[in-house]
Image (cartoon, rainbow, N blue to C red):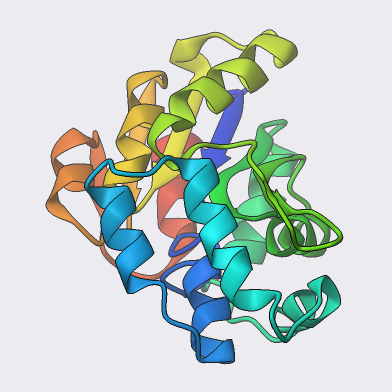
Length: 207
């Protein structure tokens, strides 16, 4: 049996080769949330307000189905299928823990065989974001999942690429900075992998 029982993946920049699923929508629709993003980084607004302001830009001319259609063609991170297959064969549970959009996370999970999805959503009428994973408090989401699965901290691996994943590292036995986009995640990680090949994580998890 593998020493690690649960591997929690951030989504954007780890499982898919994109900056963020929210950013992807803005790029496709030609909307600009730079001011909102800056307010969030400065602590002037919380995660719920951040999502709701984004939706206010999108719902003027688009439906929820329009947003979902933007994720029909996405570039998966190289090695994702082989990685999930090997983890599954070894009896390791997998999860997405992401502040990104659940419509993409659920599609990825179905396509590559990930067991659990924790991600944020959009109400059907586009009036409100559904906050499940506050980006700055991803440790709480991961801890909750681990409790439900009766998995202890030392048996958890967290894989992320940004400062928002550092909190997950703190509640895991192994933190892997994969395709890192800032120095904070590298500093906090036990292992850093800069190559865009997800199978590189397997040697640290399965031995």
